[in-house]
Amino acid sequence: MSLVVTAPVPGTAVAMTDVPDPVFAQSIVGPGLAVEPPGGVVEAVAPVAGTVLKLHPHAFVLLAEGGRGVLVHVGIDTVQMGGEGFELLAAEGDAVAAGQPVLRFDADAVRASGRSAVVPVVALDVPADALTSLRAPGPVAAGEALFTVP
Image 1 (tube, helix red, strand yellow):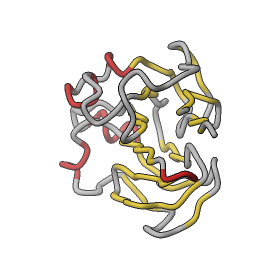
Image 2 (cartoon, one colour):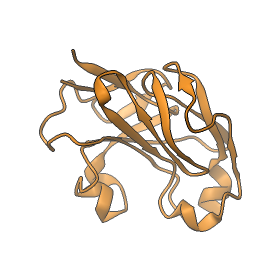
Image 3 (spheres, one colour):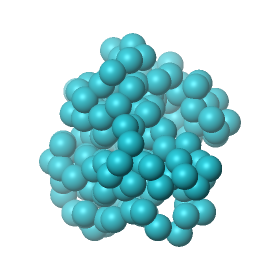
Image 4 (cartoon, one colour):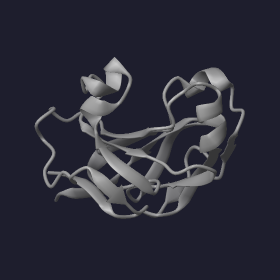
């Protein structure tokens, strides 16, 4: 059964190769897409239904049905912000529905710190060429499909 992964934030879908971090741009963590969010305070929602496996102020991993993991990483090098500008809305171990808010962040504060606010969305433990139905770059609303994991 395939897994449709949706946008956790609104904004502009961008290719992973355009993410300003080699770990994401080279799909070292895994394949996916990224979303450049708008300014202001933004809620990052679950891109799939599942269990919150890991949760940090700047990132979370959901374990979806079938044991498939999805990483949402808010911004680049945002771990260095020590949680400043981020608010957790869920907890590790929580079962979440697709579209349920997981964290809130201030995209302007991320950018003001000199960091990118781009949000990579990564399918974990799948080959780089495994994804199908990749969304073309351009405007995307939270909850719209980004890609499918077979």
